[in-house]
Amino acid sequence: MRPMVAVSSFHDRLRQAWADSGSLLCVGLDPVRSRLPSPFKQAPSGLRDFCCAIVEATADFVCAFKPQAAHFAAEGAEDQLAEVISHIHKGWPDKPVILDAKRGDIGSTAAFYAKEAFERYDADAVTLNPYLGEESVRPFLQHPGRGVAVLCRTSNPGSAWLQTTPEEAPAYLRIAAAAREWNRDGNVMLVAGATYPQELARIRITVGDMPLLTPGIGAQGGDLEQILRAGLDAHGRGMLISASRSILYPEVDMDAVCVGVARDFAAASRMAAERLHDEINNLILALAGP
Image 1 (cartoon, rainbow, N blue to C red):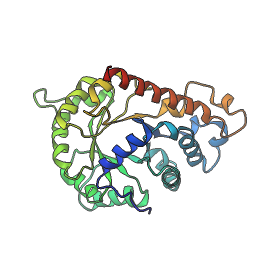
Image 2: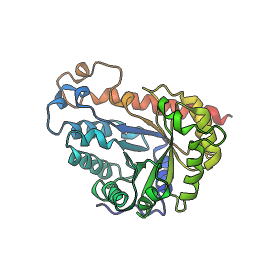
Image 3: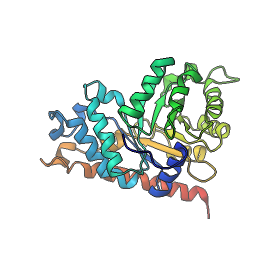
Image 4: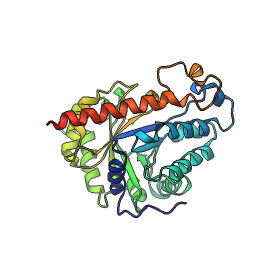
């Protein structure tokens, strides 16, 4: 396992990543074999090779990467996931890797989940489900310099039945308030979906400058200007705006882009990442005013 960068907290890692990259964009690595360009579909190492190619193509425009654990585990490709994360660390050590695993348990099971995320995969942070309370979060916070991204207000419409009730004290705001207490060492952030900008704004008020991981842009239809208005911190940062499908599978004929050369397809993903990066930064400048 690599030595950790000499910073005091995961929040320090993020602040450095935002400053170094000039970006709030986080690219999700959610490989689906049936959607991969032809050269990768049948290759045993196709998930790894595809994701590594995406990383190489988009790294200039992102502050972080977010591989999705289940997309690898379902194919018995956990070793490929570890290799993707190692590839990022070796080539772009300034870009944190957030393992999207949504773990949620207590006791020794939570401790082993933390070991899996931070020792087996060497991720910088991991997504957690807080349903079991602080007991399910604490084992992850015992790894200095590593972070957790706690599910707060998720981007899927079916989440409202629990997250927005009861009306007078909705669960998502109770999670936000609890996360503020858990954030004793600057290692906690919240997952707050782009599809609910008004609720995102309430979360920002509750947690101050705590970082927010914000999925739901692109394929899920979140409005970029609205979520920037709602979610930027006092320094005009504070967000990791996550995009996956719109970067991995842009609206082009992937096989035509490949034209038989495995790495050529990545040009379309690079263009999609650059376009979203520029849109985010231009909106931030416009919102800052003269």
